[in-house]
Image 1 (cartoon, rainbow, N blue to C red):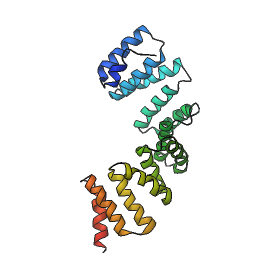
Image 2 (image 1 turned 90 degrees about the vertical axis):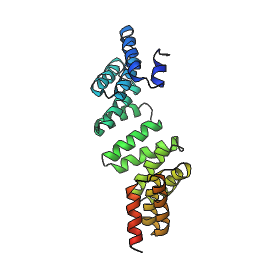
Image 3 (image 1 turned 60 degrees about the horizontal axis):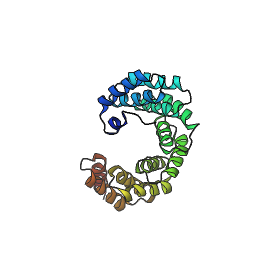
Image 4 (image 1 turned 90 degrees about the horizontal axis):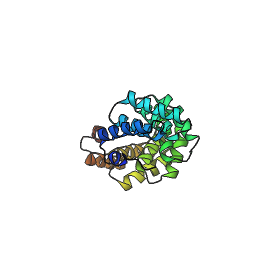
Length: 215
């Protein structure tokens, strides 16, 4: 369905989009899409209490709305309400379990809840569906590092550093070289790259200093 305010949303004209969505709701008060789009724009504008009401209205109009569940879950996630976010993400997941972004958000929610093992399965699916997504590869690799799964972590972080300049991926690759191989020279190389990419990367600076002080 083509919506009159779509161009305003894509151009980032948030306040104008909100006004246009309100007008659309007056004309079509039972149209679920208006409330989802309105909620997303209100969330973007920092008006989250109103955004939550819009998402709840969309759900009341269509109790099977995957988009409404996902959008409300994102709002909860942004406010650190991870258990509530997971509950809603899972409702959307039950209808579309191969969506990469949904699996990624479920994984990240479980990471914040300290449930690393649960996060792994969702990262695996997200990466399988979107193998070229560096955000997914980095976070998946980071979790593998924390769990001592160094072989997959090295491959995942390597994908990131091969595709883009990513200071945090370089830094964590340096840590991995230390933990997996006890290779100080390789670690320093990655830490140096991290600070070259991001001059104020304090963790990389400290790691270099500490390693050189022990030589």
